[in-house]
Image 1 (tube, helix red, strand yellow):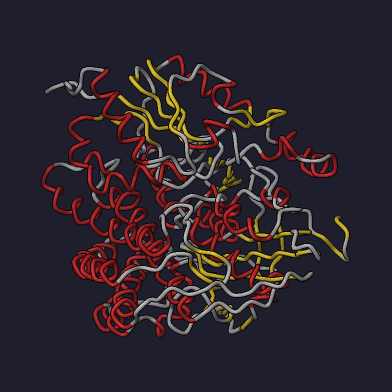
Image 2 (image 1 turned 180 degrees about the vertical axis):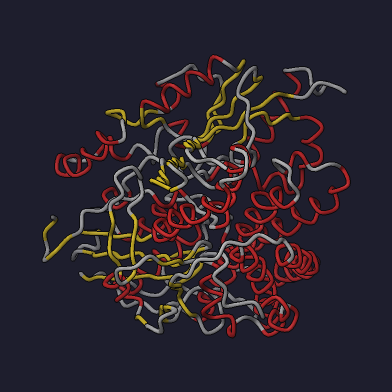
Length: 429
Length: 161
C-alpha cells in the first residue's frame, strides 16, 4: 500500500477536450486532488456581445463540436424566448429528432470507444483482436445511425445547418424518413446488448450526492422544469439563481454548486429523476436494468447512457412513423429588447444559455452554464473518495482507475472552459 | 505485413469538431483504415500514444498558449508532413476571437491570459510552424479529407495509384 503518492496525469485520454489530473497522498491520506481542465478559453461569453441575434446560434454552436447541436438548439430557444417566438409543432419534432441523433452518436462514441476498452482491458478500439470485430462493427453501426439521423434532419451532425429561428430550412422527405426508420430498427438489438454489457460490468463507486436534470414529459431533453433529487422544481429561467459560481484557480472551467452543495447532472441524473418518462418500448425492454435506479454508483452513468440510446431510437422511430413533414414558412420576427433563457439537456447534462438583446437585436450580455462545469466539484470529490480504496494497487493501475472514474462522467472539456464576470445590478463586478 | 501510414491526430484550441468528423468517417472505413493507417497518436481514442517518427501529423485547432507552441514545434520535428485541419488551424478563427476584442473586453480577460500562460495573440498553425497542406472548413470538409488521404497514401507508397 502506498503511504505517499504523487500522480500527475497530463492529458487524460479518451475524453472530449483536454484535462490534467494531479493527486497528492501523504501518510495514506489524500492531501489534494486537482482536476485541471486545461482547454484554453475561447471567450465565447465575451465574443458574442454585440453580435446580431440571427448569427448567435450558429456562432455558439462552435463552443463544442460533439455537443454542437445542443448549443445550437439551446441558443435558438434563448433567442425565441427573448423575442416571443413560438416554434411550430413540426419544428419541435424536428429538434427532438436532431437532438436524438446527437445523443445516439455521442453516447455511442463514449460507451463503445472510450469506455468499452476499459471493460475488455485493452487500450483502445485499435487493440481489439479480430474476435471482437463483430462487436466493433455493431458499435460503428449504432454511431452511424445517430450520425445519419442528425445529418438528415439537421443538415450535419457537427455544426448543423438546417435549424433556424422558429423553423427548419429543409424538411426530410418521406424517402429519407423511411431510410432512417430502417437504419434505427436495424441497430436496436445491438443497443440492448450494449446495455447488458454495462449492466454486468461490475464497476462500482458510490457516494451520495444531489442530482439535477430537466424533467421532460416525453424524455426528449428539450422542455419542462428542472428537477432536483431534493424535490425542488425550478422554472428554466430561474435556474441561474440556484447555482453558485466557484472559481477553481487551476482550472480553465468555472465550477458550480447547486444551492450551496456539489451536485451531478447528466444521464445518471436524468434516469434517476425521470425514468418513468422514457419511451414505453424502452421501459418494457429495459425493465430489468431500470430496476437498479435510482443509483449513486457513478459507473451507472454509463448504463444510463446506454438506456438513453435505446429511448432515442424508440422515440425517433415513433416520431418518424407517425408524422409527415411539410415545408413551412419561417415565423415573422419582431426585434425587441429583452432577455431569454434556453435550457435543454445536452448529452452530459443540463445546459443553460441566457441572452440579453438590445433594441437593435444585438447581444448585450450572455451567460452559458455547461454540464461538465457543473460536475467538476463532484468529479474531484469522487476521485478523492476512490483513492483510499485503490492505494494497494500499483501506480499504473491507480492511474488507470482514476482515468476510468473521470471517463464515467463523460466530461467534455471543450465545452467547459468559460469565464464570465457576473453582472449585478446592471454592471460588471 | 505491409507498411502502414504512420499518422498522428492532434488537437489544440478549438471545438474538436473535425475530430468528430474523423471518428464518424470511421463508421464506414474502420476495417479498411486499420490495414492502412497506424494511428500512433490519437488521444481522443487511445491511452497509449507515441508522437515519434510520423509520416503525417494532422493538427486541429489554433495555438493559444506557450505550452501548445512548444508541443506543435515538437510534433513538427517528428513528422514528415504536417496538415492543418479545420478552420481554427487553417485560419485561427473562430478560436482567435480574443485577438479582435476592444479594450474593455481585453482588460476583462487579461488576468486569465496571464494565469494560464496564454500567448498575446491566438495563432493559426502556419504562424508557428511550417505547414505542408490545409484541409479547411468548420468542421473540416470530409470529402476533401478523404481525397487528400488517398493522395497521401499514394505519396508515401502505401497504396499504389
